[in-house]
Amino acid sequence: MASIPKLNAEETFTLITRDLDEVLGADNLKALIAKNDRPLRAYWGTAPTSRPHIGYFVALTKIADFLQAGVQVKVLLADIHAFLDNLKAPIELVRHRVDFYQRILISVFKAIGVPTERLTFVVGSSYQLTPEYTMDVYRTAALTTEHDCKKAGAEVVKQVASPLLSSMLYPGLQALDEQYLDVDFQFGGVDQRKIFTYAEALLPKLGYAKRSHLMNPMVPGLKGSKMSSSDHGSKIDFLDPAESVRSKIKSAVCEPKSTPADGNGVLAFAKAVLFPVSRLRAEAAGGEGIAEPFVPADAPKGTLFTIALPEKFGGGVLNFAEYSELERAFVAGEVHPADLKKGVADALVKLLAPVQKAFLGDEEWQKVEKLAYPPPEEPEKKKKAKKINPRHPPKAGVTTAPTDGQAAEVSKEGAEALANGVEKMGVDGK
Ligand SMILES: N[C@@H](Cc1ccc(O)cc1)C(=O)O
Image 1 (cartoon, protein in one colour):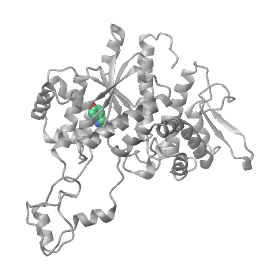
Image 2: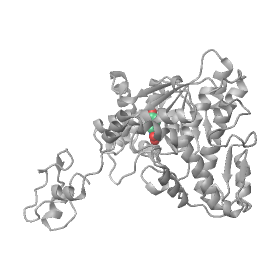
Image 3: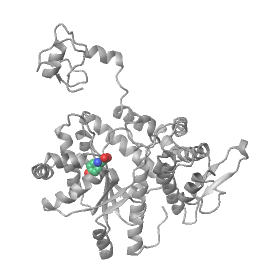
Image 4: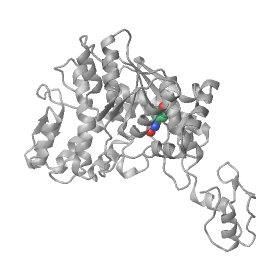
C-alpha cells in the first residue's frame, strides 16, 4: 500500500467512515482524532464457523481504510463465540477453524493489497478464560435480562427453537471484548447493530468506557437476500473454483434494469465489493494508477470496472470509473444482465485467483482445511448408528450409543414417542 500523504483530522475521519452504513459515537472518534496524542485503536471480530464467503471482502476492504488512516487494527478470531453459537461443534473443531480462518483471511488481505504485518490477530480464548474476564461474564449475566440477551443476539446468533444458554452469553462476551481488546471502536456489519447498542449500554454499568461503533453494509446474497454462510446457492466461498464462481453468478438474480434495492445481487456485489477493492488497488498504485489485475492496463485512467462485450454482438469494452455510472447504464438498459454477470465474474475470478493459488501450494493449509471441515459422515453409517429397536425403546434418561462422539440422552418425549412406535427420535434435540 502506498503511503498516503499525512491527513488532517477531517480527512482522517472521512477515510475511516467512508462507505459505511452507520456510525455510532462519531463525536467521540472526532475528539480522539483532534486530540491526536496516540493512534486510534479498533477491532473487527469474526466467529470461525462455516467457510468464510466473499461477503467478507466488504469488511476486509474497510479495514484497509482504517490502516491507511493510521488506526491500529486487531482481528479477533472469536473461537469461544463460535462454540457458544448453538453450533454444537466441539471446541477442538472450532480451534482448527480458527487456524483455517487466520490463513484464509491473511491470504485475502494480501490479495486486496492490505499490509498484513500491520494487523494483530487475537484468538478469543487467549484472554476470555482469565479470572478477570470470567468474573466480568458473571457480572454481565447478573446485569442482563433474558429478553435483552435474545434481543441483542437476534440477527447474529443462530436462531433455534430451543436456544442454548450459551447463545445468551454471546452478546455479553462480545461487549466485554471491546474492553479487553482495549479499543476505541468496534467495527462490524450492520447486522451487529443490536449487539453494539447493547454494548454501549452495558459497559458503563460495569464501570468501563462506552465505545464507538462503525458498521459496514451487508452484501446481499446472489439470490437477493442477505449472503448467508448456510445458503450454498447464494454465497461464494473464497476457495470456490473459477467454474463454480462463474456458474453461481450466472444463475444469480439479476433482472434487467433492476437495482440493488430491487434485489439485484450482482449489481449489489459490484457496488459493495468490486468498486471499493478496485479503488483500493488504484490508490495503492498511486492515486492515478490502474487497478490491475481487475482492470486491463490499457483502460483509461480512473477505470475501476470493465465489461468486455461478446464478439458476436460487436465486441468492445465498457469502462466505469464509479459505481453510479454502472448502475445508471444498467437501469437505462445499456448493459445486458448477461454482460454484467460476465464482467462481475471475470473480476471476481481474478480477485480470488491468488487465494486459491496460495491454498493449492500449501500442504499444511490443506491439512488444516480437512480438519476444520471434515467431509460429512456417510448417510448409510449414520442411519445404522442411530437405529434403535422400537420394540425395546430406551427408557427416558438412558444414554444411548453415541452417534457423534458425544453421549446422547433420550428425552422423556423421545422415549414415549419410540414406545408409541413413532419414528421421530428425541435424541439430544437433533
Ligand atoms: N458477532 C460476530 C463475531 C464476533 C464475536 C466476538 C466479538 O467480540 C466480535 C465479533 C459475527 O457475527 O461474526
